[in-house]
Length: 110
Image 1: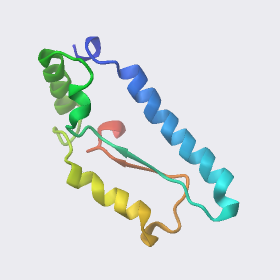
Image 2: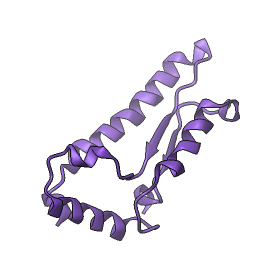
Image 3: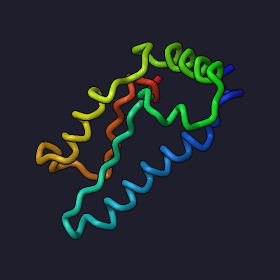
Image 4: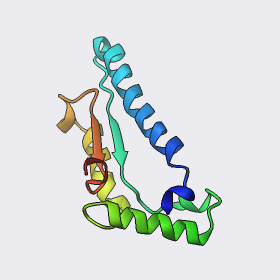
């Protein structure tokens, strides 16, 4: 199974830490009119996976797990994540702070 090959605990703990950091910084910096939000992308094929030292079989297992678990049944693409980053950096999000914009094909919500 996928969990035997991939260190999910550190990965998901780091994601939770980023969300917590954004919320804490948003509270601390609000008086300075500084907004802080987080962007939580889903799984997007990058060079990251190749640097983890996993065997091709483990990577295939990971891919199968994502495709079976995510409602959209596939990995994301960078061009699907980028608009969220642009939105958070723009005036369109001027009334957002301490938020976590999740763009993950529904993976974390099911």
